[in-house]
Amino acid sequence: MSFTVTILGSGAAVPTLKRGTTSQFVSCQQRSILIDCGEGTQIQMRKFKVKFQGIQIILISHLHGDHVFGLCGLISTMQLLGRKEAIIVVGPVGIKEFLMNQFKITGYYNGFPIDFRELEPETSGIVFEDKCVEIQTFPLSHRIQTQGYRINEKPGKRGLDKEAFDETGISTSYIQKLISGEDVVDNEGNIVKSADVTYSPKPTKSYAFCSDTAYHTPIIESIKNVDLLYHEATFTDHESERATETFHSTAKQAATIALKSNAKRLILGHFSARYKTLEIHKEEAQSIFERVFIPEDGELFYV
Amino acid sequence: MSFTVTILGSGAAVPTLKRGTTSQFVSCQQRSILIDCGEGTQIQMRKFKVKFQGIQIILISHLHGDHVFGLCGLISTMQLLGRKEAIIVVGPVGIKEFLMNQFKITGYYNGFPIDFRELEPETSGIVFEDKCVEIQTFPLSHRIQTQGYRINEKPGKRGLDKEAFDETGISTSYIQKLISGEDVVDNEGNIVKSADVTYSPKPTKSYAFCSDTAYHTPIIESIKNVDLLYHEATFTDHESERATETFHSTAKQAATIALKSNAKRLILGHFSARYKTLEIHKEEAQSIFERVFIPEDGELFYV
Image 1 (tube, each protein chain N blue to C red):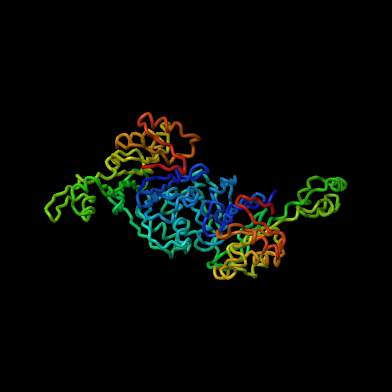
Image 2: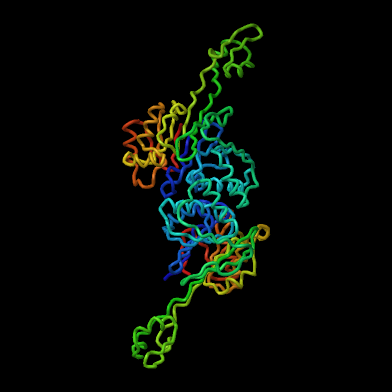
C-alpha cells in the first residue's frame, strides 16, 4: 500500500491563481485524510483528480480562514453528491460551532454523520488509530491554538518465507499466527519461530504537518525521525522579524526544525504571496538542511 | 460610462472545473456591485481580472451555500489586503449572523465597516440609490427566502448643443442649470428653455437578476422592459417535474418570463452539472424568446 501526500494549496493568507490556501490530501494504506481546507479546496481536488468522497478523516490545524473557509462547502458538496458514510473531523475547540453555524443558516446539513473530535489547547497524543494508521497531534506555536499532526503507518504483516516454512513440515493452519509474529508449537511438539520462517514487514513510514507555527523547538520530540516533514516557511530571512511578530517561520527556521528532528525530507509551504519566486526560500533552507522541496499545488510526494 | 455584467459563476449547487457557483460582477457608472458569492468567487475574480477592492455593494439573493460560501473569504481577503472603505451588504435576514459567526471564530473581522441591510421576507422596493444608480429588490419563489434584484442606471445630465446655446447669447454661468434640465431666465429677461439648447441624455439601461427561483409570474412587474435579464435555468424541459419540486426553472420557463416582461435579452444560468452541453437549454429557450445567451464563466455582457 502506498503512502502519499498531495499538496492542494501551499499559499498563505489569500488564495491566488498560482497557489491555493492550505490543504493537503494524505493517502496512507486504506485511509484517506484531508489536512486543512482553505477556500476552493474542493475545486483543487477536482483539478488534481483527488476523489474527495473517499475522505474518512479531516484534520484541522487551526481556525484561521485560510485553513478552514473551504470546509463547509466541501461537506455540503459531499452531501449533495449523495455521501452517506460518516466522516471524522479533528480540530481545535470551535471547529464544530464554526461548521454547525453555517449549516444552520445555509440549511444544507441533513446528510451523513460527522464525528467531531475537538482538541483542547495544548493537546498531545493519539487522535485516531486503527489497524493501518496512527495519527498523533501536538501543539504548535501560533497566534491562536494550532495543532500539528503526525501520521504513522502501522507495520503490516510479515511475509512468509515459503521454502523455510515448507522445511518445517508443520500444518499450513499455523501460517496466520506466524506472519502475525507469533511463535508456534504444533500438535507433535515441534517449535517453529516466526522469525525463522517469515520476513520482516516493510519498514513503516511517517509524515508530519506543522503549519502555521513560529519556530518552536518543543515540537521536535513529536516529529522525530519522520520520513517526510511539511513545515511552514511563510517568510525568508529578510522578514525574520515579521515572522516572529506574526508567529510564522522563515525557511531557515523550518530547515533547522527538520535538521534537529532528524527528518529525512522537508517540504516548505504557506508561502506569502509577496514572493515572486521561491529561490531564496530554497537556498536559505538548503544552507541548513539538504533535502528541501518547494512544492507546486497539485504535486504528489511519496512518503 | 459603461454598464456591464461579468459572469463569475454560472453553475448550480457545486463548483466544477468548468463552472463556478453563482456570482456576478456588475459595473454601472461609478458603482461596482457583486451579486452573490459562491465558494471560490475571489479566485474567479482574479482569473477574470475583476478588481474586487473596488466593490462597494454586495447583493445576496439567498442563503444557500452555493450563493454565499465565498463571502467570508472574500471579505477576509479584502481586509488582509488593507481595505479601509466601508461596504454595503444587502441580503435576506440571516446574512449578518452568517458572516459574523464566521468572523467571531476565525478572528479576522477587525477591518473596514460593513453596512448590513437585511431584507425581511417578501421585501419589494429600493434598497440602494444614489446619483447614478438605483437598485430594487423583489421576492423570488424558492425553498427559502430569495430576493431578485434590478439595477437601473439613472439618467445622466443632458448634453449641451453648443451652437444653439451660443445663439441665445446668455451667460455661460447658466449651462449647469440648462444641462440639468432647468429652463432659465437671465438678468435681461431672456427665457431659454433647456430642451432648446441641450440634447436628451443617453437612454438609461437596466439589468435584472433572478436566481434561484421557480417559474414565478409575479416577478414580471418588477423586471418589465429590462435591457438584460439573467434568469436561472437549472433544468431542461425533460426535468420540468424536478424543477417544480426543487423550486427551480427550466430554460423554457426562463424564456417565458423574458418574453412576458418584455426583456430585450436573456442570459440563462445556474445550470445543473448533470448537463454535458447546454444546446438543449438554448434551443428550448429560443423556441419562445430569440435573444438568449448561454454564458461561459468570465464572459462579459454590455447591458
